[in-house]
Image 1 (cartoon, rainbow, N blue to C red):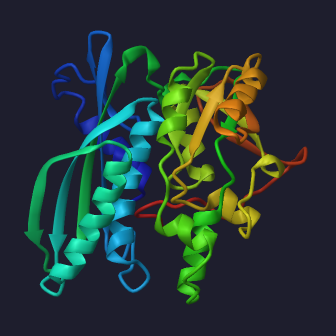
Image 2 (image 1 turned 180 degrees about the horizontal axis):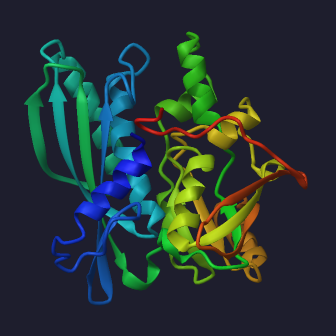
Length: 316
């Protein structure tokens, strides 16, 4: 069983359930239109042994990260996060100090972005620590960016150099506990301001955040949009200290992946740099509509075979 196959099966099995005004499965967030506005909802689970190891992750950093990955999903929809719910399952060995430090990391980031904690649940776990966060965002319905809206001729762009988080994880596994890549992995910074700004730009069509690596995540956009794409790996920006492979397939970046009208993309990039003091990076193009969407990978114009793959749960 593969993760994408499981999601497809769940989607198929739930087609007969009432929509109750919500848009269906398929984006970083579920969408509830409310007139000219919309609420968006997302949830992510972090499991000990899968998403984090306690001997390499402090409780404070884990609290920060648990919230950050959910705020990133809201930002990728182009709207502002406003509230979260937290469910926390702790083992009997988890101390009061650990719980305090976790909540301090969580609430410090929530305070930074003006996000309310409005409820949740606490339980005991007989296995490892388990964390589930639900984030709620709000914004203008016209500002929402969805994966399915990429268009022929769009440029594909990313909002920052990639691979730092993957390299930071590798360093942690090797016993290296300091450095900007380690910091990128331990405390990812959700691109909320950039996401909201891009949400208001009409030339931006599709958008999502990078959680499983660009090699995996771009597939979501091309498949949802019914489009083929081309990517030049030589143009993918690589974070300082990381490798190109880590930039292509490394996960847990929580940067933005978007497509924008080809004729307007240059002006968009200039405006983004003026606003944020850093560039957007064009890495490829949406080429044409397709019944079997695919991505062609190149390296400076030559065909490129990426032997490594992005992260997938349940991968064979």
